[in-house]
Image (cartoon, rainbow, N blue to C red):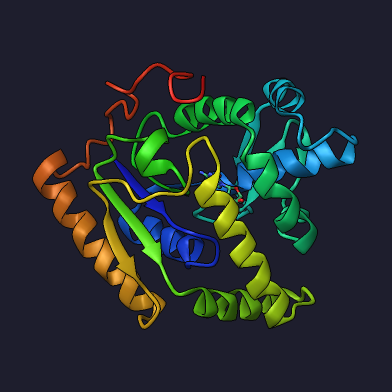
Length: 248
Ligand code: DC
């Protein structure tokens, strides 16, 4: 069973998706981290970030792998091939570089393939921009999180401060507006609400309220639709269009 959590940057997807995964006992897949890992590795090698074919060929040559810190229940480490990217993917520089990278149709084809392989079997909370629309269109539950851009900028500023990253509200606000604009208007798999997704405006909700709401829904869906085991043995890719169809 897949729970798809999509939404714009700073909507609280990551924290919510992780807590929902923990409470449901599901695996967790952060697809944004995958785009970020490719962006960092490509920047290190001086690959032209607007060259979709070069990015795809480079990405295709490596596996992207998530790993657990000792004692962790959810994976927090990300590897591109043998290179650990964990500490490098969330800088303001990568925030800026990753939008055009993720807008390359050729690269998205490879990401789609990798994401479907990673989430193919078992119970997953998958977070991103196009999970409910493209990657897992038959997800059992689709949630689209939103919040007004000022609130998202406030949350991101606090998050950066907690991580010890220099941050200033006004530039974060502008960067979020730029990324929203880019993510919503790109040609391939733009940020959009799936027809059958629940849209949740979290501007005035606490993280706990959002998580509680999703967990209740997910429990109902699991019990009613998939049976008590959540369809854990199911192949989540059954019935999906052939990989490449959306990205040709
Ligand atoms: O969620 P995030 O900020 O870590 O995502 C990083 C970038 O990747 C962002 O520009 C949106 C893009 N992305 C995407 O296009 N599709 C996804 N499924 C996940 C992220």
